Length: 114
Length: 113
Image (cartoon, rainbow over all chains, first blue to last red; front, side):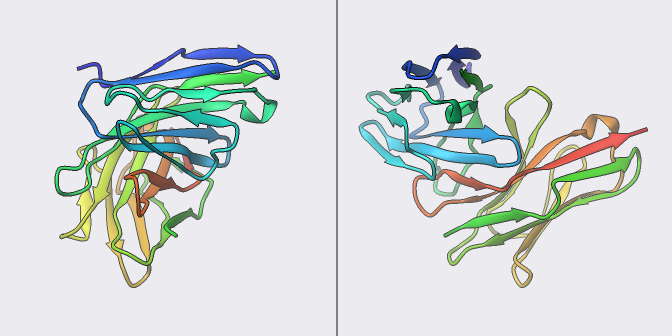
């Protein structure tokens, strides 16, 4: 299994540009999440999904859209990038086997918005 | 709402010395607590977790954490650290919905010879 994969690893955007960060998992996990990591802030939840077709907002959803058309994929879209969205983005997935199981994280996407 | 507070942003320690990284949580429901480790330029890896049962949980590389309900704490300890333990450590609590996590701000552990 590849686990959780994210593309691209690095990206530089100009203010106002749009892009999609890709996330895929091959573990048949129902639950997927997007976090952003900023220095001194830890990881903050952007959006999450409890299954295909179901998404919800986390702590910092503004400026981001998500969709979940398949179990495997959970892309994160920036419609109009802003410098405040410069961050490292992590995707995670998990399953629930009757008790809470760990979240598996992807390697991250480092995004810079100029 | 569930939240965690990591009381130390940086912890410098000498190799082979003991270390404690502090984490306090707030939650009004059943608590699931986690410690994750992030090595430089890498993603997060689960170090250990508390779901229920024994309040003392251990990792395979010598770390342990104790769930203390009365003090609402989940401190991480290691009796003797190695240079290779240098990393960022995050305490996290499960949210009420969606199985996502609320993370603390992280503690940077720096182990020097």
